[in-house]
Image 1: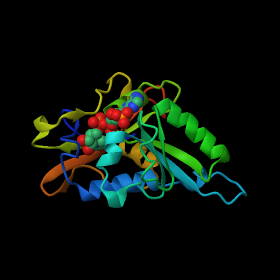
Image 2 (image 1 turned 180 degrees about the vertical axis):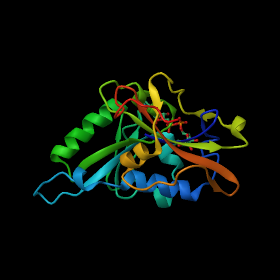
Image 3 (image 1 turned 90 degrees about the vertical axis):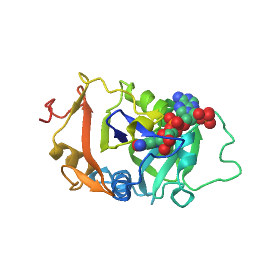
Image 4 (image 1 turned 45 degrees about the vertical axis):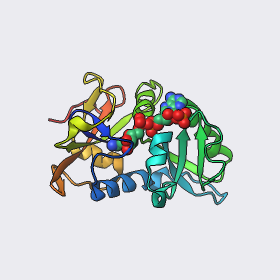
Length: 213
Ligand SMILES: NC(=O)c1ccc[n+]([C@@H]2O[C@H](COP(=O)([O-])OP(=O)(O)OC[C@H]3O[C@@H](n4cnc5c(N)ncnc54)[C@H](OP(=O)(O)O)[C@@H]3O)[C@@H](O)[C@H]2O)c1
């Protein structure tokens, strides 16, 4: 679950991102497109293995047209509007009415669809994050980019509050193990805005249950 949030958990303002952080977006892109060799499900039917990104309808609509759909990933838009994509069908993109339905759909696609799906990323907004955070049957990891954002009080959309007794901050080495590449460590700065790549894992999921200091 990748999320970029200010210290007050703000993630959006007026339907857009509150900040412009191109290197952070490149990290998001790398995290969500990387398929590790051991996740490439052995098969002989020629179907490629990709990751899936599940997002709310507003997050989908907010993606700049050149980044929509997210390339090289299976895009699932959560909406009550079954006809959302009728006028503008996009490759490897579909709608589903809830995160639970999206996960069931992913199982089906992996069995019989055009692609096999390795990892599932929940990419926002608020209700979609919230639904996923409370799914007890799934291994939940929160790839949080924490932004030192001066105008955080202007945010109108928020990441849910993580239960600190349940979601444990992990060491950077564990983050790198999860994303599958060397990630920048410590405070990063772009256009005067600082941010840090972090990983929280649900206690029941954590590799060894230890917290980062
Ligand atoms: N900083 C970050 O990491 C980050 C990540 C993502 C988004 N954002 C920001 O967050 C804002 C968008 O997020 P948002 O929370 O306002 O909207 P959102 O979750 O992207 O979209 C809300 C819509 O998704 C559908 N939906 C969501 N949950 C549903 C559910 N459980 N059941 C059925 N439908 C559901 C509904 O669509 P219908 O109305 O079509 O039924 C709902 O109106 C933007 O400002 C965006 O830039 C930031």
